Length: 273
Image (cartoon, rainbow, N blue to C red; front, top):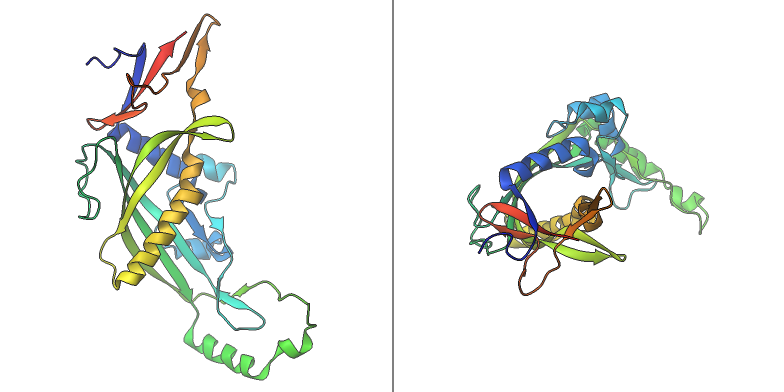
């Protein structure tokens, strides 16, 4: 069946082109893929990152952030409360359209179903461990100082203070996911959005730890990162000299998928009005 039998126009992007777009997006919005405490916004902290951040020069010229700043990882039952510096990074991103030939999938996600996409991500993280002597000295202070007795009953605890970092203990994980690119109505507007249906981390034991990490990472991607990458369908609709209007073809029995994913490409169909 010709690609335009049930539409007037179509536009397609090969997975290689899509991956190039994703690379540029990561370089232009580094704070969407790098999270850590304020320490890692300093020159000394940036030197200790598990993975060097590659950012478009415009990001630095405009003073845009490289990192999304988060609160320190709390050390429970300390008062006043203290925590550890930490860093979490999505350092690599690759997408593979059906039938899937850029990279292999783990058995839990293989084979890649029709109209589906596969994602491969490299996730790196680390916790900033204080010097052993500092921990010993600070522990002695905690033994002799009980601020709870001096704080009023309803007085809130002060903010968590990060302990000084001696070194960053880094690790990296390879993450695979499968899903689809769907049209979805959000707040009355239609968007193109990536939806995940499965996610696997390679070689993590015990199973409970693997399942917990997969739960967290899938939730982070679904709620925190992928929503920022959605595309409004109205952006794809436009007029030419107020004479011809171009808009995405509605989904129907004749056009069951729009966009459609096959042969290593994603294609969008359009109608002229």
